[in-house]
Amino acid sequence: MIIQPKTRGFICTTAHPEGCAKQVQRQIDYVQAQPAIEGIQNVLVIGASTGYGLASRIVSSFAAGANTIGVYFDKAAEGARTASAGWYNSAAFEQAAEQAGVKSYSIVGDAFSDEIKAKTIDLIRTELGKIDLVVYSVASPRRTHPKTGESFASVIKPIGETYSNKTVNFHSGEVSTAVIEPATEDEIRQTIAVMGGEDWQMWIDELQKAGALSDNATTVAYSYIGPEITHAVYREGTIGKAKNDLEETAQRLNTQLAASGGRAYVSVNKALVTQSSSAIPVVPLYISALYKVMKEKGIHEGCIEQMYRLFSDRLYGKGETAVDERGLIRVDDWEMRPEVQAEVTQLWADLSTENVYELSDLEGYRREFFQLFGFETEGVDYEAEANPEVNIPNLR
Image (cartoon, rainbow, N blue to C red; front, side):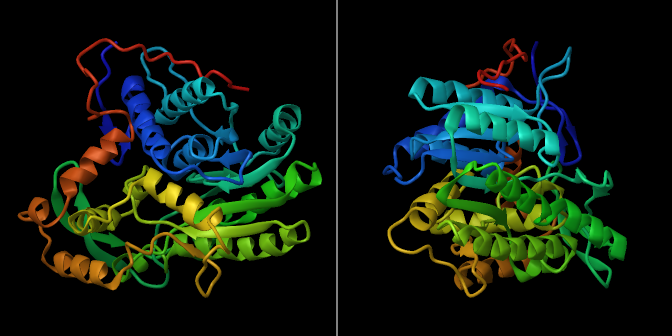
């Protein structure tokens, strides 16, 4: 079949297998051109098929030579429907890992469930023995609690007051004003339940109980803080409450793992084009302005560059891992440089529909959005027939 992009809002409902494979290979090529990383043998990535999770898995295998297990919730092709981008990404990753001689396994299912945790632990025992690094990179809008059965849905809302600011339709380039009503107390509670640290804690508890963690094991989860422009809807909103909970969980896990020489961190990463960030009002326009400034300064990074820097400079670099006063790893440090933020703020004040392509890198944002799904990728003939049915070599 000929596969073309079909969009619904901030979601692309199709994905291209060859385009996804080329995007994965581009990340692998980048990592293989960098100095090797030492100190990791076996890695578990929870939320492993796209974005930072996928990049973490690629860095683990192709910079450190580590074996990996990826847990993710993606769908295979069915009839006229393509597989999800994460499915194609994972298939390409596993094929490349197999050729490189490193072990890689995939478990597809609900990472929040007891069943998937148990299945993952069985696989660790059978194939890897123990895990040195656990990456928690789950980005889901919903969660069913494995013990109570209660279902939660997260929301992206401010707290206390109605919020309004500029936003953009990155398909049309129209700049408008987003108006978002404040969250209720129950919406805050549910967002924390989905996006906070409880499930991360459950994973580490189960892995420890099963004896599946190595001495000196590390675990890291990912977060974002961002600039004043986005604070009301992000860091000071419902998502921010969930991220606060995630950071508090890291502190508890750090104490818990310290008894065996282990450690736990939250890494605050740069704003990037991901399926998750595309859903947050205001953020796509901010990222478009940020990209323009950082590219002009020669300090722009994508997911793979960020994760290589996190692993090589912070988690497994020489000396102690550098953290801020709150114990957070900050690989958003280039984004948050005062001179970068000053230029973004200046652009933000002037942005409108008429000048958005001139004052921001909205075209780059739009292109990267489609590349998440394997489209607009150099070297792919999108008019040619493509087979949507792709197998993941080591799917368990």
